[in-house]
Amino acid sequence: TATAEWSTLPLSGLFVQMMERLAISSSSAGIEASDLQGTTWTPLRVMDGFGTLSDAGTLPGVDGADLMAAPAGPDLQPGVYASGDRRIARNVVVADTTLTPAAWPADMPVRGLDVADEQPLAGWLLSLSILLLLADVIASLSLSGRLLRHSNAAGLILAALIYAPTQADAQADDSFALNATAEMTLAYVITGNASVDEMSDAGLRGLSDTLYFRTSVEPANPIGVDLERDELAFFPMLYWPITPDQPRPSDAAYRKLNDYLRSGGMILFDTRDANIAGFGAASPNGRKLQDLAAPLDIPPLEPLPADHVLTRTFYLLQDFPGRHSGRDLWVEASPPDAEQVEGMPFRNLNDGVSPVVIGGNDWAAAWAVSSNGAPMVPIGRGFAGERQRELAYRFGVNLVMHVLTGNYKSDQVHVPALLDRLGQ
Image (cartoon, rainbow, N blue to C red; front, side):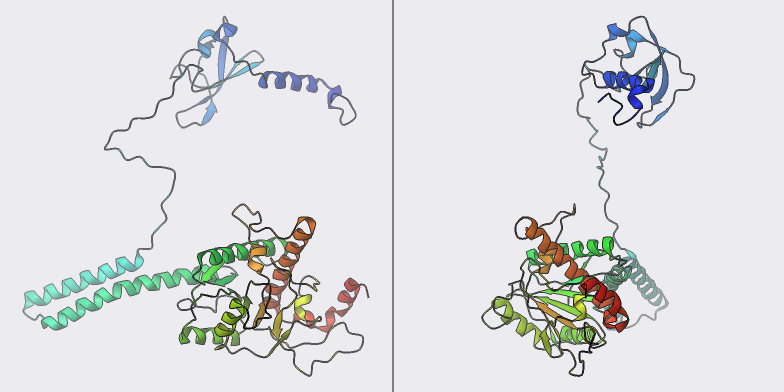
């Protein structure tokens, strides 16, 4: 409103000028050529054929009758024109201009705005150069009369042909390694179920965004891992959703998984069934988890104790919900000598990271976000649902912090600060 309650601007002459400019720019009526009769308009800024505005320089003025009616061209360039204190924008087209589709000659290629992805050609070019080298060697031996036996020559050619795809595979492996190690990256196990794999990717992307905005951890986009082919050592944590029909990995894959667990990696097994059967034989996902985990070198497990480091690595938590709100979470059992010290809020637990965490709350669905950052899966109803999603994010943050820092928050140096936060 035009009062001085919110600003002294309405008391100044600038406010009147602003209102006049707004009245002109918000008017829906077009400017007719007859309204400009008898005036001369000087160009201030003109637009070239690439749509770039530049100073008009010494271009001559234009009669007002022609400014809005005549077609644009070298003598009447579109742009901003002035007459006294008035300004008019002359567009490229006028009201009666008719736009027609461009008719391109048949021999002229028409390209869109999409840019084709670069293709790695180094391996193929190297293979081609080796083939050319072999051809040159064979030709030289033939001209000198010392050509090897046909079988040996065929063997060389066959070796060259086999070498080409090997180079391509090596190129793909190098690309995977670079993507996985450029930044800290979360990974999920590819199950072969497209919908589950897409949800895992979206879930870890949402968790990565949460880590980026709330902590000093800045993960890259998550990567799907093929247990049979990909290296696991690049990733601090693997999210493994359980589906009843996913294939069991090979013995070589299990050897890689056991090496990964022994070297400090963690696997989060998610049965996604709200733990309705306690991971027992009554649940298809629970039976599949038992089958998949049998060859793994997993230590004894126990339900997550109330003083486990996962409850305080970043947030103070007692619940760990995802899309479901089940409370059961299994981790490596604490050593029997980890006793409670009088006056301390928690035990001095084992020094390493639990190699496996098992639950069934479908955390990926709770973390999942679309390309615009909006949640993909509804959780609960109203405020309670949003609170549940927030706790799911906090559990994910605590989990990643536990992987990266171990049992750092079990150190007794943190006791005073934790006691203060707990209000004790």
